[in-house]
Image 1 (cartoon, rainbow, N blue to C red):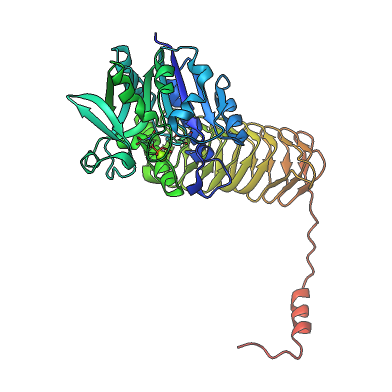
Image 2: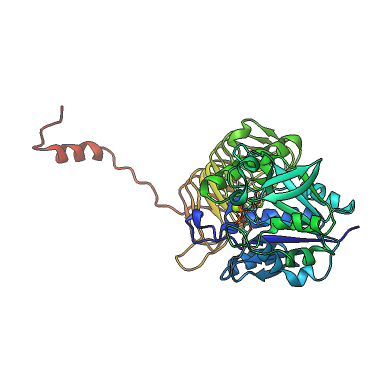
Length: 449
Ligand code: UD1
Ligand code: MG
């Protein structure tokens, strides 16, 4: 197995994003772009990953450490071009891996398989391999100059002749280098060009001048979509959503209207799951076999047990744990709560920081009052309990198994198992008082027409 070093260039300024957030931390499908790139690097079996960030980009370093703890982070103090950026990881390059692959942190859609294809020519003796693509409009990209199937040079747009600008095959930005020769090639690159930058792309001509060969392989345009603006971020999102929907469909999930379902790259589905239209899945969601997510639900950080039914118009927030066959209906919000098998919470309810035992029924309009303005408190409800409509459970509070809360109760004290709790004012009827009241109030008032 050839040892692979992946160098991710993430020192981009991202000025066109008009953002306080470093560009590579902008998210697609619920994760920062750089994390998608790191995933692809790991998927391709990288033995080591080096990420080159800009100065003052500690947030990027922190995200890298979070998703790829073994990755090294290097700072490029000044932006002096792509080759200069790669050389910021000199220490890693000097270890002499077999293959080096350069990726961009703002090009989040590259697949691990594509990295494998890109590396393949190195094993055949090429010193450099470049990922080409054919964009609709090649303006701004480097052009790949080939002769008899061999790559002879990459010409940046600024230096390209009119004839070279006619070439449709462009540099997608990804490059694989023979790891044993990489440092030597990179050190030979100069900055005598229109932008006074050290161009990584010069590695092709330099390798050939040293008697080595270079290769180009082609990738679908959608994989090399680079993000420089919010519009391109939205394009990347659309492409990734399309992939995730296809993956879900291929895995046997029914998406009634796939275009209206939004997924995260880590959304996990079991067998025979049905997702109705207009559902949004944030990060960290697992939906088990036979569950149904009904229309217009918003789900994140939640686990939906087998056969459960969620929605329509439900919101599951982080820490929602729904057991087998749980029903969560319309206008119900669940947060940081365990609902055991068979629990029903069907209408207009908030359950937060709670645990609810098996087969308990929670009536419409119930609220767990979990926050006193300073701290969150827990509500514990046993199994087979019945929470009457429009109850307020003022946490911390515990309701025992089989207990019954009368409709409209404000529960501030623990309720023992099998007890009936009534926490509301007693009703009083005053015969005839409504008529007398009306007569008194209407005296001297002209009735409205
Ligand atoms: C580069 C390629 C061009 C290719 C295009 C694909 C070069 C010289 N040109 O051009 O052939 O068609 O990408 O998108 O390589 N970066 C740093 N530090 C730097 C400079 C760049 O980290 O000093 C990073 C950027 O953040 C970005 C990537 O490298 O992620 C590419 O840099 P960019 O300036 O966008 O290069 P292009 O001019 O687009
Ligand atoms: Mg660019």
